Image (tube, rainbow, N blue to C red):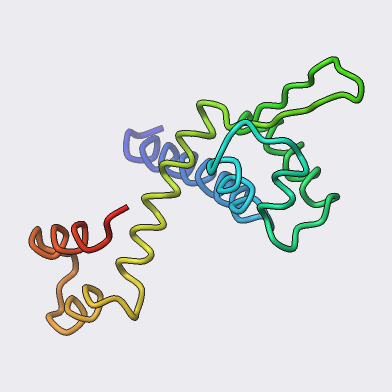
Length: 142
């Protein structure tokens, strides 16, 4: 196998991993669950259900179970009566939350209604220049 074919196969393999992760993220309720856990953790099941408007108990349970299997969420059961269960983001989940926050910032920055997006479209710019990034950063204080 030539080197160029191997590089292409490596890229293809990476794309498959990215595609699989993206499919997991875009399942219904995944992003709201990550966001709700990121607001304050650990959180109990009913706390999360109250934070996520419109989610059913079944959907929340399914999403938490799947995210626990993926290593994004941890589940801790306390041997009390009645049992108490708390959920939190794992280090993997915290890293994902940070990446999603950056993706959210990017989406807002480049939305069609954003002034920077309009300026860049009018000028034909492919990327934002440093002054635009700085201006947006200061105007969107967290």
